[in-house]
Image (cartoon, rainbow, N blue to C red; front, side, top):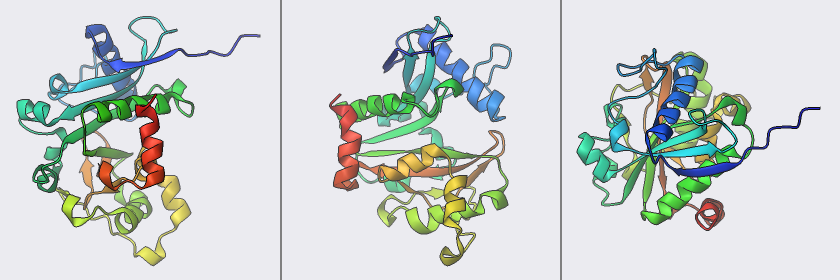
Length: 256
């Protein structure tokens, strides 16, 4: 009988081209091959998903040390602080959302993006490993506000109406943090008392639900990204506003 694979995880910021190229290959597998996305800098020949913002991010990678070099990255997050955004000319999601409420808040910002896991590592401890490493990064840099776009697969708004409406009615950001979609797709598509909550939750990606459990909220309006074949919402988390239980859960990784 074949023994089950036992991963040996390590999290780190990408430290060389081997780490970065493996991260871009994983992103290609997930965002292009699996979800049908595309973009002007996607390299289909080399199977790399990338864009012009990558040089300005820290790339947090989850490595399974039992896998061969080049195929060793099984999870990824990219992280941009204000300095990276200044060098890039903007945060990535400013093409989709007006971030004026966050930019004028005089708080330390961190944009999260391109979070994904290799299909063989979903449903286990891999996401917790990434979240723990993210918590350590946030603590080390005294980050106040986390934000970034998170995606629903597909661009059929009618199919997403339950989930989008639940986010709007139950998880809309307070006015002080309420970023707004530029190409505005309303999210209040169904009255609050008519939402099928179980269906809405089933239709909501696991990553978005994880952000909500940590105290996250959403900006006003969705953004339909036809090139990437997604419908995006902007999630915002104010670390000072997390309740005691959520803070303890989040900080667990920072103490690890």
